[in-house]
Image 1 (tube, protein in one colour):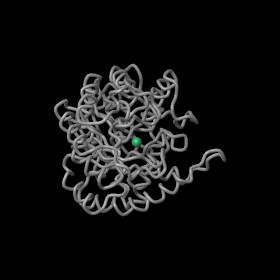
Image 2 (image 1 turned 45 degrees about the horizontal axis):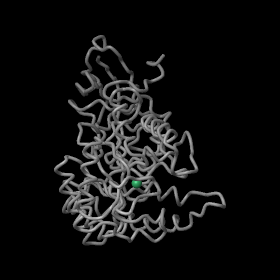
Image 3 (image 1 turned 60 degrees about the vertical axis):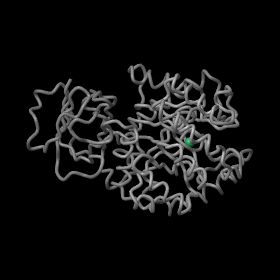
Image 4 (image 1 turned 30 degrees about the vertical axis):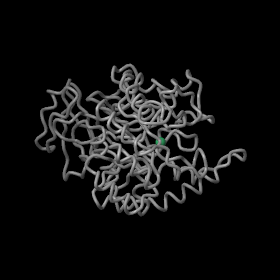
Length: 409
Ligand SMILES: [Zn+2]
C-alpha cells in the first residue's frame, strides 16, 4: 500500500522546510520526502492526496494522558470515579477523541482502573478501536492509597519491598509506565502539594526494580524534595515541578538526557477559566493554579534555555478540562512560556516522539507515517490545531484514519 501526498508545506518536527514537497508513504513508513518538482509518478501510488499547499506535520504526542479521566469534549461527567462499565466506555471514547484531534501517540500518566489501559492499548494496536499509540499505565500509586479508587494491597503500603511488589505486578500486567504520586495534590486535598509521599529508600527501590523490569516511571512532583526523589528513581518524566528551586532545576538539567519534563499548564489555565456551579468550590484550585502558572512562566523558559526536553500534556479529563482539548497546550506554551509556534510544535511532535522512544514525531524518511495535513500554517498560528475541522487528514501507521473530503468521496 502506497500513498502519495502531493504539494504540501512541511513542518518536519523541528522546523518548516522551504518550498513545497511530496511525501511517499509505503508500508506504514515515510518512504520519501522530495521537492514537488521531483515528485514520484502519481500513477504508481494506490492513493494520491492533493495537499493543495496545506501543511503536513507529524501527529502530536500527548505526554500526560489520562484516558480514564472520563470527561471529553463529547461527554462531560460530573463525577470523577465512574462505574467500571462506564469507565471502559469513556476510556475507549477518549482514545478515539484524542486521535480525532490529531494525537497519534499518548503516554499515560496513570489510570482510574487497573488493567483497563493495557487492554485498551492492545485493542488499539490490533486495530479493533481507534486511538493513539499508547504507553499504558495502571492506577497511580501513592503509599497510602489514591483518589478514592478501590485499590488492592499492591497499590499501597510502605517500604522498599512493597514498591518492589508493585513493580513486579506492573510488569506482569504488561504496563509500559508506572505512575508514582510523589507529591500531594492541592486539587484533591488543599495544602497537600508540599507533602512528600515516598522515602528515599522507597524511590531508590522503585528505580532499581523498574529498570530491571524494563518499565518506565512517570512522577507527579511539585516541590524540590519530590523532584529529587523522582530523579533518584530515574523517572522518565516529571509532571508539574512548579516549585522547583535552583538546586532542583540544576538536578533536572543534570538528568536531561534521560528525563523529560511536562509542566501540564492546561489544567491550570482551565481551572482559572472555569465557572463552576455554586455547589462546587474551586477557590483553592484556582489559587493554586494561579500560583503555579506564575512560577512555571519563569521555570519553563529557564529550563528550556538549558536544553531540557519539555513536553505538552495538561491533565485533560476533568469536566472543566475535557479530553480532546489537548492541543490547547501549544497555545499556552506560546502565551505563557515564551515559545515560538515552531518550538511549541516541536514539543508536541519530535520531542514527544523521543519520550515514546519510537520513530514518530518527524516527517522524515524511514519514520513511521503518523501525519497530519493541516488546513493553514500552524507555524504561524498554533491555535488552529485546536479545531479538528482544520485537520484535513489524520494518518497513523500509514493508514488513513481521516482522509481529505475529496479522497473520502
Ligand atoms: Zn496527571
